[in-house]
Length: 306
Image (cartoon, rainbow, N blue to C red; front, side, top):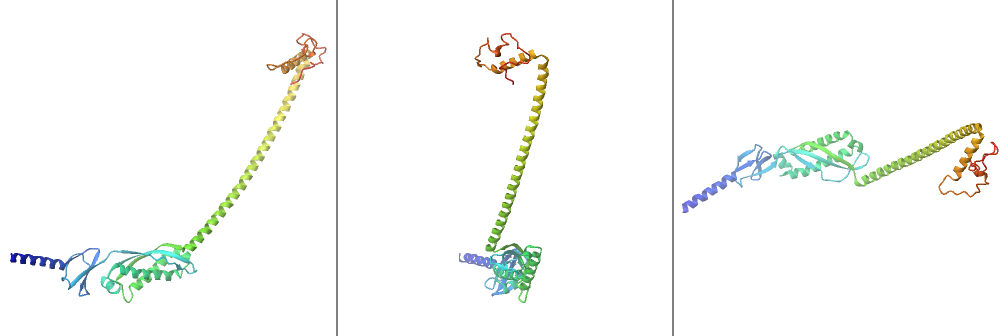
């Protein structure tokens, strides 16, 4: 039994020793092998590799992918015309030499991001101090980003290389500080209100002008129509009088009879009309009595003309 236990223990120890000597490097990482605290080897080839067991050798990993650093500082910067602006930017960078990176920057990606953030911000501050706000929002914006990238590369590849490469530097937003932005918005709002009020006033004046012109044209049209109607009516009355005169002049007795009938119609033309008179003696009812007028020129006494 002791022999079997010894064999099992030996196998377990051997397996533990073998597992401590093997390590796997992912294709997205660098494997850095340390020997007594010093960098012994940098493994860039992905796969299974062998090293000495701890504490003789240890392994740490560093990301080899393209990394993104976004700006987190909201402190304003001064332009050439002393305007305070706030910018948002990002940097695309990667670790190219893990040995230099560990010696001069740090043991992980966070250390590099912190130092790179400081360098990029200083470069932006220096370049923005040389430019106006118009330059920041015009085609010269690309020139600004290229100059910042150049200055950052000069730092990270200087006398103590960081072992990193800066691929791209981009500005995502340029804006005034909040106090200036509010002031600009208030001025824009006041200007828009002024233009709106001016347009309303112009529209109201134009509307009054159109309504006055329409009223004038209406009055003129009504006056012209009334004038033409009165003219036509007068011409009709004159023509009717002429026709009546011609007709009545041919037979005066018939004319007197017709006018008497018109007078009766006008006096008793509606249901319920009452005429109080003496038919036997009244000249008004001479036609009913079968009499004729004493002369053609004497019209019926009560015959109204319509």
